[in-house]
Figure 1: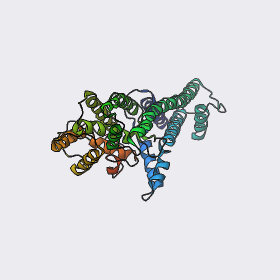
Figure 2: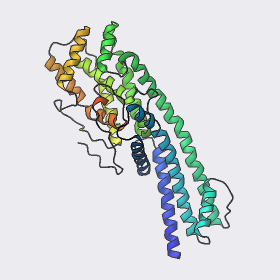
Figure 3: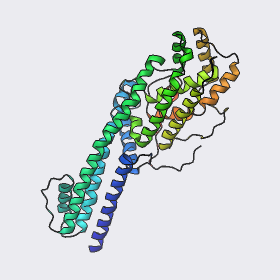
Figure 4: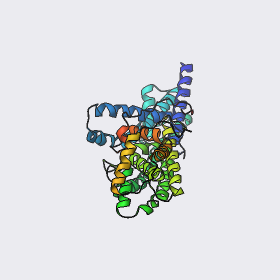
Length: 362
């Protein structure tokens, strides 16, 4: 029995340490370091939400239910942390000897919730009691301080997403964005978007890898999405670079690079595979026919286009190949609303594995 109590104490201490480490990696560590426990909780809750939605549900139903996914899962994650800490201390209290499992459970529950109805009668037990109370309050405080941080990042992200509707319509589309700038006689000022959205991509990369739950926070409007907004801007910059006959602006190049780096790093956190160094002529999800239709629509609207359509397609595909795979996969992962050239071709939701694979991409 003595050996069993020692083993129970060690297992309990390891459980508490692992739980606390998971909380630190999830909430405090300012980089995209995955925590196995958080990954299991989010993956399990995604499965439950998928079952609740059903296969034949309308998009409106999927959107309404998935809007609850990230907030509810964060609360469930807190509950899992607390339950594991309670269980770990239960084992440690029992491992110290002198009490049964029920007494150890009562002492652990009294300590973690700072209720004080169960009292310790020796120094080692008192030390564990105080440490559990401190850890329980610490976990709660971590989540309380975590929520304003992620909602601040969410608010900044969505301000730009909402403003994009004015320029690119709803659902947003790169072709419509170019048409509107031409229609108001400001096609030469479309470059005003690139530096602004480059900064947006930089912030989204930092916030969505440090706080990956943000990826699943849906826009206030059902037809808005940070993924479709990102795709619209990237396609617009690529289209202007490749096909529109205006002076080339290097800011569009920087915006595209910032965009595909951000999407790749977010995708990398979720183990979405991609080629880090694609060839310009590698296949993309967009067809030449779709590109031609877009060019024809722009031509009808009066937008000046470059005469060499073959070269324009090669240039556009050469830009798009850098972000095509990760953009479509993230649209599936987040169940993004319909938008041309983005979520209209994400046929399945990407489901990240619970066990993280190696860093190799391909």
